[in-house]
Image 1: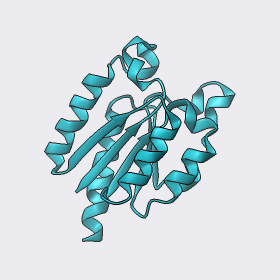
Image 2: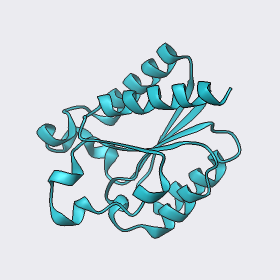
Image 3: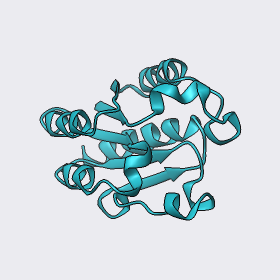
Image 4: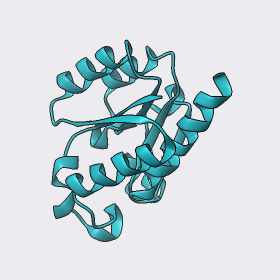
Length: 146
């Protein structure tokens, strides 16, 4: 199974952010974990990160032709980018929204997810392990379709 992990704005600075909220891991270490979990679960993973909303959308469009599952953490775009919401809505495969911190227990503006209604599953507030939970979900969902 081929899975794309799309990380958005400011996730490249993860190591510099509040470790109590974001799990105390940098993006490189997080991606290393994701790749290891993917191998463990028998899926091929491609991790991408950008601070450019247009690039993020282009990656969504491209992944539609090959990805069998999507993990998405748009960062702050989660709360207001209808352009990303529309790009995610085009997927015909399961899409899992992941947030390292529990956005539902943070500032009022962070509690809003404009993508929540177009994703298959949401995993929030579980730190880096949320990505593993998303991979497990996609792997099992993919096996159910077989």
